[in-house]
Image 1 (cartoon, rainbow, N blue to C red):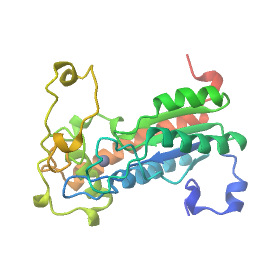
Image 2: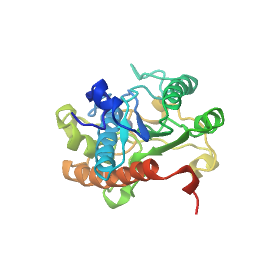
Image 3: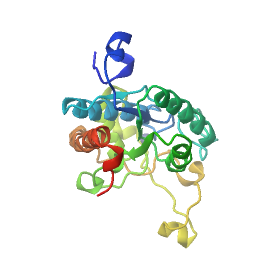
Length: 253
Ligand SMILES: [Zn+2]
């Protein structure tokens, strides 16, 4: 029983703890090339949140990890079998209900730990922050917490070298042999501004990549995944800790 994981605890231990911050891991259920499982983002969200919370807890912060939400925004993959889209408006409703509970019970900080590129909680946080002024709401993408180029040769957007390495570390039993993986080749937008990154449109995933991956996984190793996971979770743990112990009056200096 880990005291910072809600699902592993009983009422008595939860009742007696004065929690200051809740952590909501958010994943997605979607195809990850031919070699990684649909639950890749869920596994990452679970494990990064738990390890980050362990670090924060051991430094003295009373954080609590809520169960991972398994469905993410997959609006660009309607033709990819069993990619389980949850619309942004549904996510907003889920988030509002979670915040309603925390707000009522006096846990006034919520950190959304995001594990999926298609999820974007910023605009929701702006709107819900107005509705729940006592709540401090924030979000982070754990996979951006450290510079990936220090660890990996090929840039990873989806199911590439980084994610494959991380799942080889966290759940190797679910990874197919790498010679079964596609090369994760992806087409780029023909419109210049979109290629440059300052204009944006959603990509129709099946027109961009053949194997659903974006990024070549061939150089992935368990060792790279372990090092990257450790460095990310140290950053995430420190973030959880700082959010939990910083008062609203001390947010700016
Ligand atoms: Zn993923």
